[in-house]
Length: 168
Image (cartoon, rainbow, N blue to C red; front, side, top):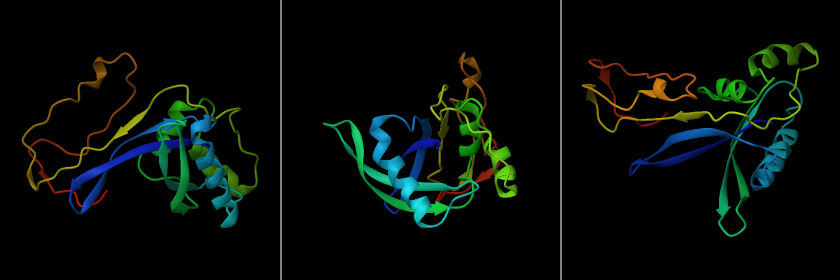
């Protein structure tokens, strides 16, 4: 199981927008309740072979420094959307979810890494627009200056129309 954590915040009073997500270690005790819950949900709905994803929300116990009271939002018998699979293959040595997606339904053994503990940090950041209009400029995308930089993608272009985000 590869795990990702993400944060949401209110973009508008009616729109709770994802802001960022990052890979986390599924073996870390603070995520244990969520990993067990996700495994149980997958078993309960019959996901045995192939790839799936389970989106869960949980509460944080500051005193115990761990997540508790998980609640399923979604489960799907497919790779998680966005760039999550790319993040997993970049941060977990020996894991290629795209290969696994093709091999698993054929009944061939998967090449599973000895651990899904990430060895790199990957962050998927969302910057939704709260207005409709023409994108005039933006700053802060000079990531190549970072020694650990790998990749980024910007889905808007200066001079092109953008729409107010109402969902992602």
